[in-house]
Image 1 (cartoon, helix red, strand yellow):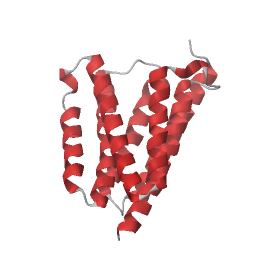
Image 2 (image 1 turned 135 degrees about the vertical axis):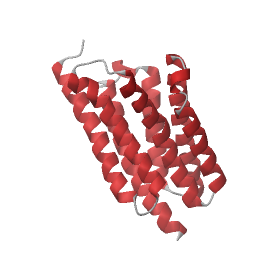
Image 3 (image 1 turned 90 degrees about the vertical axis):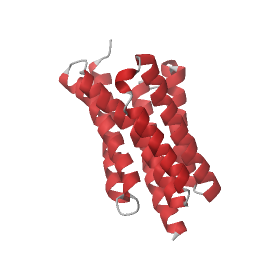
Length: 194
């Protein structure tokens, strides 16, 4: 059972991810609107994770499908932005098309299938951003991708015993730093290609 302090730290960590993503949305809107939409969807996903905690409910089907769609489309939109700015329009369109097809299949998947699909979308998008960042020498993009990979690894290992704070708080702190890094990376990537 979660303590009130744990719930409060979880709420604040989700708010921090939401705030960072909203700031990144405003900052990258002029460079690439697709990436800005990706940041905005990530902020919506964080806000949707807050709703059941704040309302003391388990959440309804609409909320869970909205969160899943925002999660499965948000990060691929960021990858879309990196590939598009780099000039690889085919890969950018392919990543976005697969993410959109995946997000429409929510009602046709089991819970395990949804979890696998969300993780697959997360991993493929993060690796795509990592590849573009390595080939263009964008250190912020590499840092952000490695941060998201670390957060995913902590989740899959269920690393509560080795952390000094709750797993969700640690993951949200890493995700917030990664999204902040992606925002800087996109701005540097855009200025390098001009």
